[in-house]
Length: 311
Image 1 (cartoon, helix red, strand yellow):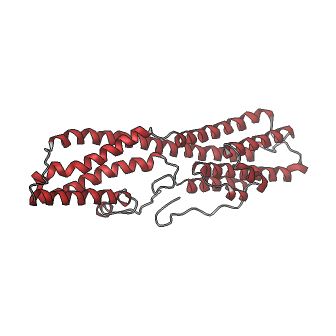
Image 2 (cartoon, rainbow, N blue to C red; image 1 turned 30 degrees about the vertical axis):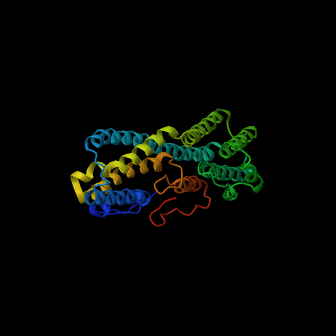
Image 3 (cartoon, rainbow, N blue to C red; image 1 turned 180 degrees about the vertical axis):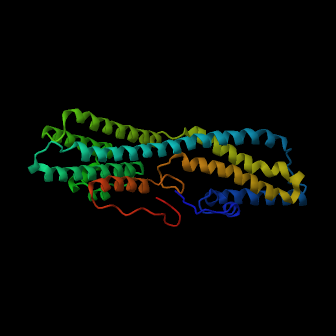
């Protein structure tokens, strides 16, 4: 995610980094050069002279803009839902850390208190592994970094799992069951842990649903094709009326349409590594810090923006 300093209105207008212009400028440059060539041909030759009225572009431009707006609204809904799901993971993780410390070992004998403390820290580290594994799963990255939290043999098996986060969550649930069998958790408190695991699984499923269900491909093709044809044909409708002002108008209009098209593509999958995607590493590290702060474990280093970008 791009993190900008507080900028004045004028600096925002001319800001390039973090904007869609960095990815769409070749398209804008192409249609602008095309409009310059066509304008020159129209004004200097009679052989190549194709002129369209502005009426078709007016009739098509308005619904096309509305169409792009609806598409971007749908993409932003996916982005915002993804952020809400990670907020839910944050809140549930805090609740889980509290449950681990307040509901486990309250009735254990004094001789087992040290073992209970080690078990509580292990659950906290497993939960951090679960959160980071979900980030890695959503970004299709390797799980090797989880050796900070889990045994190497368990990490080695994660790449063979259909869902590594679900495998970690399942194993954590099994450990909670063992703690109950040992009498470290009261029977009435077991459903609280089960509810927490269900909330985590629901949030995980929501994230996986967003990732695995993109907007229909035919919908994307129609939008890209319509925007491209509209911008490429625009000089034919303006050259006679605007003359040498045509390239400037084409550049301005194509920037708006190509920009809206590009923004929709970028935020459609909020869990990727695009410049404006969700900062999953920063969020997952913050969750880890929240959990470890309760168990007096070593806190992770805060993830800070690098060149204004949070990963």
